[in-house]
Image (cartoon, rainbow, N blue to C red; front, side):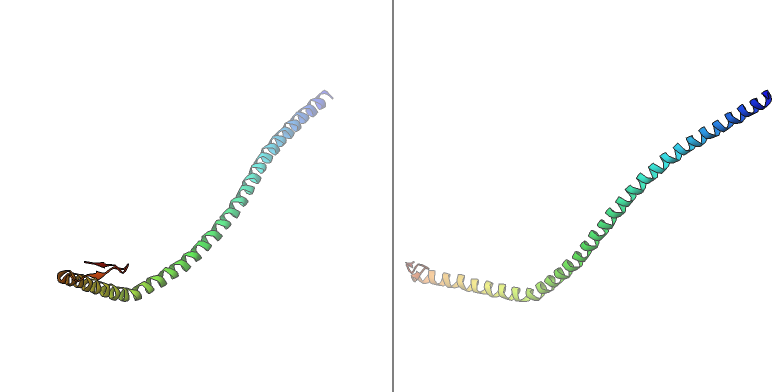
Length: 122
């Protein structure tokens, strides 16, 4: 019977060690599971943020397309108006030249002229 009791004590000791090892393994797995759950939650948050950013980028890209089209239209319109501007500037230059020459002519003749107020000046 002593031999049987010794064997049973050995079996019990062995079983207790297995239980301890299993509990230790369970605690480690539980910690890993908690860690993975935290990582999974963070991953979901990051995925949502990424999706929002992608939508924002897509919106900005559409705006770029629209604004680029507007800029191209304005550039085209500007190119169309440049000859008219150059012609108008040339006319102004000619008229200013005539005005300078006419003023010089009048100054040479010493003819009094009216200014904007209706007063005569010499």
